[in-house]
Image (cartoon, rainbow, N blue to C red):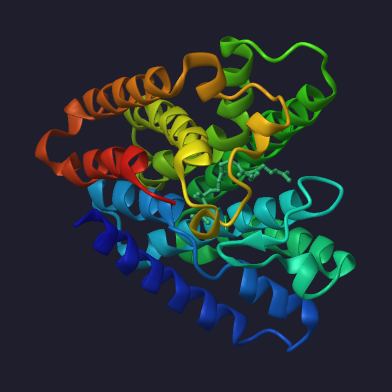
Length: 288
Ligand code: GRG
């Protein structure tokens, strides 16, 4: 089952973070970094490891960028949960970092995890300098004001807008907020091999959007305790979501079409891409 594959990836990444943090001082900021990088589905890390495998890359080399993207993802969640952003008390079913420690510590935990993400993507063990520079440069673009931060900024702006976003606006917003890191993760294997990133980019763009639509669907159908957030929070706040714009069935149909698009983009890899196709199907069938 694909869940088992994710569990294996989770254990591999956890061992990597444990070994890394063993060399860090025992301070609240480091405790918060350990805490924030623990758990989660590990989808982004999985995409790095699996696309690296597809390109014949040594898994030990791929582990660094896999940890890098999970570190950047964890930073974004810690900052997103802060009172000045989403003000969430629960994440992955546990108290958020600012609740468990305090806001100052949570800010620093996010800052440190962001820096760590770039460090891990450019470690000497990752490969030749060109590959490390390419990974770090593209990760900066995916995370910053052309990627995830842009998406988050558009999301904040939408909260103050008097008219709900249109479908194309919400699509652009989510391509940054959720999609950019997913695309980076999926392209990482090709970047490690200095190969063509385009098929994986096409795959991941469709996958990222399907992921976000599935998230909106889960917001209205999911179990708040499992998902670790308020059910339907955006919808309740009057914000446009894929479900409010397409309806529940329409959103589910669009997500299914996107998974088909994602799988079609993998045809150039033949049978070797079966696991990535399973990942795409998992994204819309998951319950959290
Ligand atoms: C604060 C700069 C900054 C960015 C925040 C990623 C993000 C932007 C906010 C997270 C809030 C959110 C619910 C986003 C929508 C989808 C998403 C990214 C969900 C969390 O990803 P999962 O489900 O999380 O992969 P796990 O816990 O499995 O790692």
